[in-house]
Every structure is written in C-alpha cells, then in structure tokens.
Length: 592
Image 1 (cartoon, rainbow, N blue to C red):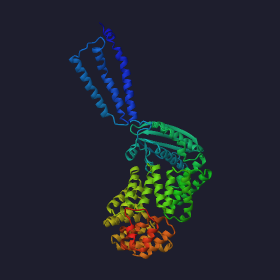
Image 2 (cartoon, rainbow, N blue to C red; image 1 turned 45 degrees about the horizontal axis):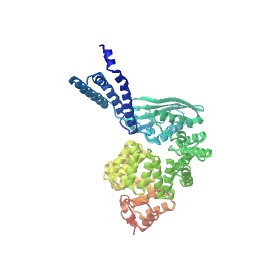
Image 3 (cartoon, one colour; image 1 turned 120 degrees about the vertical axis):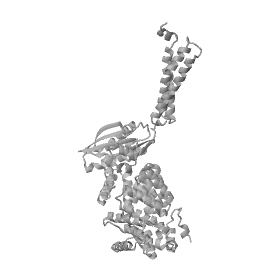
Image 4 (cartoon, helix red, strand yellow; image 1 turned 90 degrees about the vertical axis):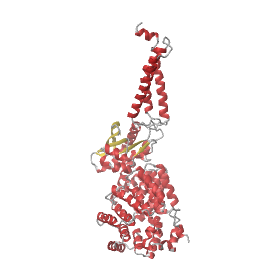
C-alpha cells in the first residue's frame, strides 16, 4: 500500500485539520490570561513553540493509535515521545532565557507601565520668538502623559535640563532610564508653525510614530491634540476618559489666549526682572481674553509669590494680586496642581494658615504625583515649620522622580542640618554642589554644614569658592551664613570681615527686616535686637514669619544658646502664631 493510501486509511488528515484548531483555541486562552492578569508575554510564544515541536508526536500518535492504528505502545514509540518532550523543554527554555521579560498591557486596555521622556522641541530657525512654542508644546505633552495610567513620564525639570543632549539617545536612556522618547523640531514660518515629531522605542531604536505637521499659529491647540493622539496610538494607550485638547490647552477654547499664556509661562521662568514683568503682562492679556482660563491665574500667583518670598523690591504691593490670582485659579480649576501650589504658598507666606497650606500641598501632590515640584515645595514648608522627618520624606520623593532636582537636594540638606545631622547634611549639599557647581548658595550651605560638623578647613575652601562666585553680588543673608560658619570655626579675621560687610548692608537699608539681620544679631549676642527684628517680622506679616521657630534651635541659637528660647517675648511671639505640632517641638520651651 502506498504512503498516501496509508495516510488516507489512517485518516491522518484529521490531525492536520483538527490540530491547528486546537492550537488556535489554546493560544486564545493563553492570550486571555496574559492580557487580563498581566502575565509575561513570553507565555504566548512559548505555547506556539510547544505546539510546533509536538506536532510530529501528534501525527505519530494518530498513525499508531488512530482508527486503523495499533493499540499497544512500543518501546521505540515511547522513546520518540520522550525525545519530543525533551526537545520541547529545550526549545521553550532557550527562548525564555534569550527573550527579555515584559508584561503585557493590563486588562483595562492601559499599556504596561513604561517610562517616557518628552524633550523640549528643537528651535530649527533659532528664532527667539519661537522658543516659547518649543518649550510650551513639550510641557503640555508632559502634563498630559503624567495624567495617563500606565505611563511614568520624566518630569519637565529633568527632561529640559538635558535639552542639549536631545539627539543623544544612549545618554538619555542611561540618565533617565526611559523606554520611549518623544522629540521634535519646530520652525515658525510667517504665521505658520511646522513641527516634525517622532515617538521612538529606545530599546530597538524603532520609530513608533513620526509625522510632519503644519498648522497656522492660531492652531497650536489642534497641533498639540494631533501629537497627543499619535502618542496615544503609538503607545497603544486605550484611555477613553481623557480629552487631550482640553488638557493641553489648560482649560481655554481661545487659541489667542493660549498663545499669550505659553509666551507668558516661558518668560516668567527667566531670572531677570524685565522678562518676568513681560511674562506677567502676557498672562494678564491671556486672562483678559478668557477670564475663565485658570492656568495664567495660577502662574501669576506663583510668580508673584516667589517675588514676595525673596523680598524683591515692591513685593509688598504684589501680595493682593497674588492672593486674588491664587484663589481665582482654585475656584476655576480645583483639580489644577499649579493652582493648589499657589494656594498653599498664599497660606504659607501671607495668611499663615498652616493647616490650609498643608491641605493644598497634599492636594497638589495627589493631582500631580509625577511632578517633583509639589514635593520639594511642600518639603520647604515642612522644614520651615520644624517637621524635619516629614520634610525629608517629601524631598526624597521629589528626588525619586527627578534625581537631579536641585530644590529637592536643597530641602534634604537643610532639613538634615537644622535637625542636627551635620555630616549627612554636608553629604546632601555636596550632591547639590556636584550637580550645580555654578550655584553660590550650594557652596555657602555646604561650608556651613561642614563648619558645624567640625571640618573647618574644608568649610573655608567652600566659603572661598562661594565668595568668588558671588562676584560682589552678595546680600545680607548671604554674608550672614558665611559669617555663621566663620564664627563656629573661630576664624575671627574672616568673621570680622563679614561683620563689616553686614554692618554696611544694615546701614544702607536701616528699615530692612532681612532674616540675615536676625542671624547677625544672634552672632553679635544682641538678644534685644533679635527680638525687635522678629517682632517687626510678625507685625508686617513678612513671608519669612514661617521660619521663626528655627531661631529656637540649639544649632541656630549659637552664642545666645538658651537665651532665645527662654525669653518671654519670644515665647509669646511663637505662641501667637499657632504653629503646627512638630517632632522638634518648641512648645516645652515656650510653655511656661
């Protein structure tokens, strides 16, 4: 009998027809479980390998034991089955080892957690007027991605810090530990903007999406919407409850208002007062076009409150506008993290409602858990009110999101220093100094931490670098912190030089209630002068009122050790401010 006739008689064709059907069902079952229970995607391929390897065994079994086959098992047949089993295990094992583990998208249609970086878009034409668009579009995409489940987005501060390395994929992967990268190029040609953007899988350098988009300048929101939808498809995000255009626009339907907002938002992040004032005018114009647009209200509040906090000239007149802008932003968009941060800062620096400040910071963090800003801002509030352990926790959360966030590094160092762990504080400031070698304040605070830790020679080197970097642009506070370290180390000649400078600052502005003057009074053992300054600080509702408790710490009291906390005027002053309870409670010192 011919082989074909044997196949026909034994009905081997049934295996060739039925087997693929069985394999298909098995694959559907495996795919269901990997999709719905977040199992390793390799199970699906392993099932296919198993099916292919055991196909010959299935044919053999049907040949030997089918309708016309023999019913007993022979030794060679059993050996063939055993060999098939070993071959299957070997094939699946090799595949499992050779293929990296990766989870499959979760059941709700949200892709498995991956880290995405959105780099600031390259300004192709070099037009300074177009830079706000390059940064603004990228920031809008970051804000949208941060709201999507299953995606961890690199913070704006971390991504923008590496703008000069946008094309260096290897460096970005190593520094940011990302899975996907969004980058683009923007050029403004007359009244049109041309954007070339791409979404890249950094693991195999494959481009998941890429497109060249041309829109009129008035169509920025539509352009952002198009990019958002493309990213959504490229990452296989199945999120139906978001409105990318609304998120990217920040709550306005007016292209003109949005354009003014983007320009203003870009300008207020500058360090010169002229740019900041221009930015504020752009934000005010955005509000005049669309009074319901919450983002410019929040930006105005945050920018002005920073001016108030750092005592910029005329800052007192800004308090009213800053307060109104913050409350308006929250009223218009209570789920906007920038609005909650502004509200928290108002309560921290103007109303001194500590509980309300804390609630607003907690709200900001819950609304934007992937942004380091609310964490380090909250940390500053916490260490300022002497809750150092909680401040450290918040600052370290900020660093977990952005390991190069200078504000979080500072919050870690200052919390450790005020709590008395000078060695750890010095280490934290050294890290800040390593990432930001151009910051004079990183050297000043490192020098003080080292001085308090007894490392006076190292402290002197850091202080000298700080003075060199200041280039004569010092301040009373800057000089006071240098003098503090000099006095701790017994460097009388250096302290005398700083004392002369501090006195010159005081004489030049006799009405100043600069907190540096309070440190100066402590170092000069002038308790009455210190109390007078602090009483004036509270009377005029200075934003540094929040820090008054710190003067009761042994670390700060220095030459007036014990005298400050024992003074009845200080006790009453602290009691009147009703500070929140602290693990470093001063209530015992002020209770009697």
